[in-house]
Every structure is written in structure tokens, then in C-alpha cells.
Length: 106
Image 1 (spheres, rainbow, N blue to C red):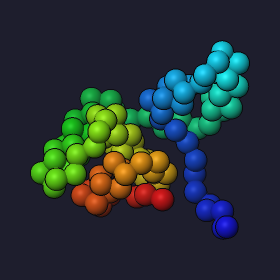
Image 2: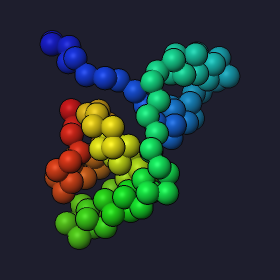
Image 3: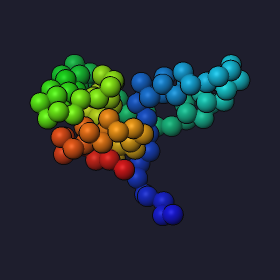
């Protein structure tokens, strides 16, 4: 399997989501220790970023491809703003990517 030479990072909401999956306090600390070392990507201008995330939602809704979580749209917007590839973990991002060509998925 080839390793892609792509920048890696997460958003704050993904960080919180990962930590919520911990089953024990020990698991929480272990996850926190590892994941907190990753590069964090944020919306450059939160107000504009959330407006653009809402536009992504509306584009998807008009295209018949809404996701299950409103969090997906700001995450997609962060990936677009930073021109990074989004590692998709569920079909919602695939649906967003069908409508929003600026979103690069792997």
C-alpha cells in the first residue's frame, strides 16, 4: 500500500469527537496524548467560515445530498479553506463531495 504524501491534521470538533469515544479515563488520556500532538486546522475567520459552511449545506440540500450532522459542513469548509484533502470516514462527506467540487476527498 502506497503512503500518500499529504499534510495531516484535524479540526477542534474532530478532536472532541475522538475524545468522546474513549470508554475509560485511561483511554481518554491515551487518546488525548496522541491526538493533541496533531496539527489543528481552524476556520480562518469563524463568522465567514460558518457562513460558507451554511452555503455548502444549502448547495447540498438543493442537490439532494444533505448529511446527518451539521458538523460535517464546517469540517468540509476547513478542508476547503486550507486546500487539504479530507479523509472521509462516512458517506456524508462523499455526498458533500459530489456537490461541492472544491472539497477533495481520499
